[in-house]
Length: 326
Ligand code: MF3
Ligand code: CO
Ligand code: CO
Image 1 (cartoon, rainbow, N blue to C red):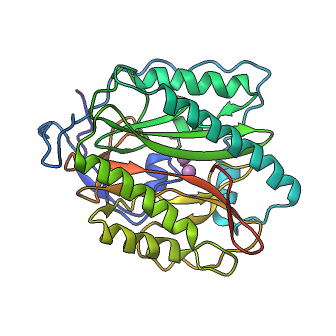
Image 2: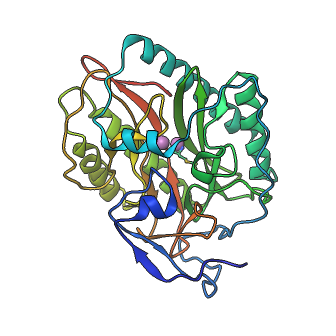
């Protein structure tokens, strides 16, 4: 497979280089030659995945209202303060999140041995459009498909392709839809057939990390305590956190302030009633470092270890938190 041959550890300019608003600028990402990587793993019984054939992005009928993915708008959002949503905005966001969650549920019932991730893309795309929503990933900063599907050693942003799911795989499916002007974003990691003990432990630890982090959210809490909480839970469970991927504010924009770091951090600011953002730690078995492939998106762990991720969009309420994608 013709993969990228650049051998650099990228740091500050990551967002620009890879065009992903969800990549943390603090490093742990490299882009290098993978020719010599054996498809082997010492982290359990599963297939090491390399990207396959990607079909063209699916068509969106003209009556579906598209999000504006314009660089200037995005950069204004990125450097601003976290937005406080009005009641009307929250109601619309709630509908987007509800649809994202329902599509994720349909995917859960659909994925099984032999289904390709391209078929998952077709399902997500079709359900979004049937419900008058635009599948947010499609053409977002050059992403070619309607959903992200990340199998085994693909840490994040996997592009659906022709690889059939195998017995023992774990697959993260990350759904974002744009409905009535608002994006709703959530993901789960599904077990395909019989997954080994290490894989099941990883997936359950990833779920605990997300739940534990959301449980501390309330007005007045520091954003940085999300990462600090996840560190504690990850350590207790003997798993690692892949720091390259961060949560984000969400609304009429896909990614905006605040940045939500999932490892120890001192990001400034406190949560306030009316803020909406995602929490989405990528939890690993091994190395914290990932490589980004030439497609600009697919992130693989450098040591072929597996990772698992769960994501919710949440709202800070007057006395706590509401999980909009629960
Ligand atoms: N859904 C991802 C997130 O949680 C973003 C994916 S960007 C895409 O932020 F372009 F890859 F879809
Ligand atoms: Co997502
Ligand atoms: Co997200």
